[in-house]
Length: 93
Image (cartoon, rainbow, N blue to C red; front, side, top):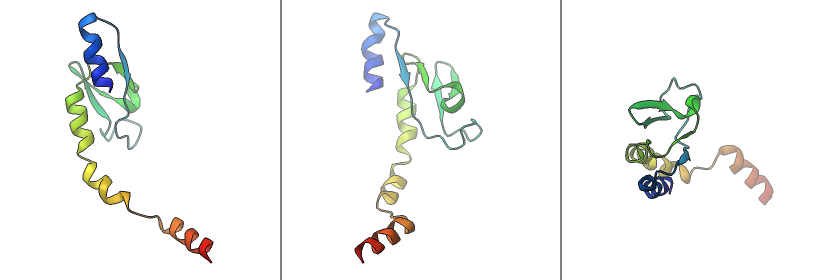
């Protein structure tokens, strides 16, 4: 949706700030998990801020990076934490 808004406002030169939520692992920028291309610079959402100029964000690259985690998310979505499972078993008794 933010890409669409940025694409819509670009021809009218309307300042558009987007708030990104890429995968963040360590919150220091060292892992690089949250890197995003903003214009000709690589930024790290966890340290450079999650808000960027929407007209400069490379949304295509950002969305491709987000998609690479989908297979793992599908596997994990059915996972039940052992603690949660134990609590549910206790509640059934």
